[in-house]
Length: 320
Image (cartoon, rainbow, N blue to C red):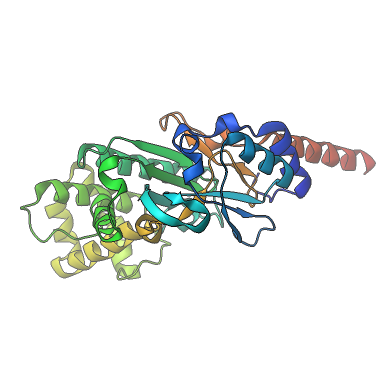
């Protein structure tokens, strides 16, 4: 499933399956104000500063070049070819399943389990953005190995990096509450920590949380099923409990790539494009509750590849 796409498969995808109609409206509506970048050889996006006046010109480029990867800027410019005269930028949360510090699987890259947990986590982020901060214009994109939460709410698109960084820390729960005055944030932080604790396997290496503390946290975590934090703290011990919370705050922050969130000129994978390294489509998620990347983001050539492999296995069995 996650084998790299060949140049032949890339050409097949862009000529037979890819359509400019698959571009989300938030990308296509002001296409000409964004910078595009491309990776043609699997070595990173070194073909930058591309500009397309409309979807037809982008379609022609994609079908001719069949890039290894396609990217689009989060920023809008009056002069995108030079990244000049910045207007505004999307606010983004980037969650990569393979980089999550706590996940239930032991896979080397990504799998159905960690991709599912990544989706669960971004749903928590989106819920916090909506309920706590009142942000509405939110789009979720499956990136091939994780998810991009792309926000086009006018209230935040013109903000600077410093404020975006503070929003990230709040939404993910990156600060240990100093007291119970800020009850809303305390509850949010506790929910994030509780989620982390119940996803622990005991094999994690977490900054500030040694193996003994990790083991005891798992041993007593059932106390948190009914939110008995006081009893849990008593079993862990006050000093170690403080260390645990500090470590979990660092875990929370590392669940997202904060550098992406504060970068006003970042380029992200283009929705509808192919993530050739894993042979998956980058697609907009319309309904997170029912989305399954193995149903909605697998190119046709992957199914054909798997059928061909089965045929080869059967032929080899017959020869033996």
